[in-house]
Length: 314
Image (tube, rainbow, N blue to C red; front, side):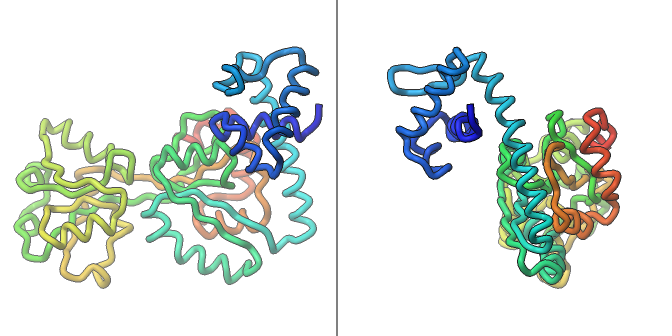
């Protein structure tokens, strides 16, 4: 058994059991990958994959156990490589972050600008997606950490920590009647509404608030992007409900906003990472810039302690 065979197993599973794509991902040929898997199965005395002819359909029960352990072994190897790289080049490398459009567009620019000033030799990759995609990227070790509001806190291998609070705002063209009366759910349901799709930016809180009041809003357009919401509100399609951190009264001229925490409560943007991730020095600096309230020593302690549920649910 060797590390390359474990990588063959991992990449085959990651690429939906497509051997050609898995081989390309690790820079080998499909026959070499197939041969390596067969040799490992022969050595272990079990079938790792379910096969139909030459096609691989999934993992056997022993295969799932092998993959789980292979992931842990390779994570340790990756950690060793990243730790030694930290000593060789403390101010250079790559930082991979998964996040949503709203965080990337409105929260991270100032953080990234300052980070780049401090670490000009560090390459940054921003992977944008839905909360589900972000969680999967984190579980699949495609990124170093994630930043989102709805990032999953149900996975025991993940640590999620509240970074900061934000509220929704109701936006409308200036002189719109919704702006001239006390803000309430009853007032909002009199108008068409433009807001987020169900996974994004606290949409669950919005739906719950209307449901608990026994009201059914007329959501005429749902989007993943705050800029899209503002665009269609500007066109008169409806009243917008969006993240307050995406609102700027100087930039969003022609619109006005009302704070809506009294209707929908407060939301937490969270930092999420795998507990077995090795964070290089510049990654810790990025976290400090993004969330000054996150103490590095506390973070490292929580990552080592799988029972630190308070951090996940805070």
